Image 1 (spheres, each protein chain N blue to C red):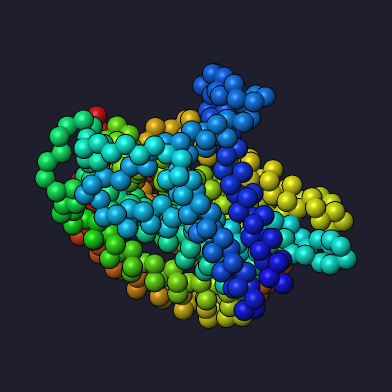
Image 2 (tube, rainbow over the protein chains, first blue to last red):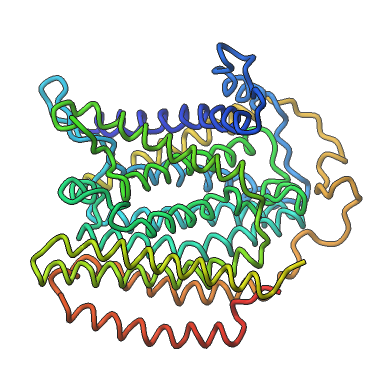
Length: 366
Length: 118
């Protein structure tokens, strides 16, 4: 029993670590491709060993601690940022149960019946690491970065939570395994609730401090934000946390909205499950990189206004539309009535877009 | 059921060990040449002045208070969403009343300018 947990945990950790390495490579190559450059292609065939070279370089760098930093918190905050980014992946199912050596193994570390609540709580722990990093550096830029990041992450967490509610409404359960199985019966939840999936994607971009919401590390304004004072492997841990969060959050989005490990032939060959997961995750990651390559960073006051005035009411409306659609389909006994959910939510999303457009036009920022 | 949490605890312990090993590798192989300039706070090359942690805009506190309000609302949503199919129309109306009360507060905060960042 204990060996099974240990092996599963180790496999998960090493998958995420190697995934982190290749994600940095993937991002640089994809960005280069979009900007018609080559990108890193020297270390190993096609630059595939680039992440190893980067890791070795960072290990041989000096670990600086500023004299007036709060030493213990300064040391602990990279750990507090990195650990949740791995631990959050514990409840994600990577495939259906497989039979190996005459025993059945589940392809997840844990299937708890409060899975979504677990995701929400672990995701909020990551805020602590970043705020404490900013505060303990005793540096003005780091402080500003930490503050910005905390305000931004908690603002978008509301939308994230409401998108989770939409999924729970459709699946009727908080366990991620049951959410995937519920999508086997109907269809991908992204088809029923397309606007919910888009809201979730935008909210996760803000949660992991990615472009165009990377105000906490805006180079032109506050050097590098909360990790200004960090160097060597402590900096690498922050970097690792950001990229692992990207992978994990794409995995969560796949599970909640894009059918998880489901795909053709997955029942007969359960090993196809992780493959389908990987393909869907890579496509979602490409969208994240594409957003980074295409859009400039948005201004901080607009970021907060967008979170509070557009995303929150829209997410509330979506929860209501979903609930109404499910109720209609249940009482009439006709599952096709669920079709009013995507129609109504697309209308709601369209109205929200129109209102954003109007308010931007009225103020006419020069 | 409890076993699942032990599995998560195993994962947490291993993740902490990985993080500590990473920092340990850096401490072990990195050079250690202490200089006065290196251990100063970095302010783009200027000589730093004043304390590093100073007073912060009150807006951040306001956002935190609003967050607590609305996050509790989200937490109320979660159990409701699970049993929604059993509750039926009753559940929908109950939640509509709850949201209506909250929306009053939301509109008040908006009109008072709590959501503005200028």
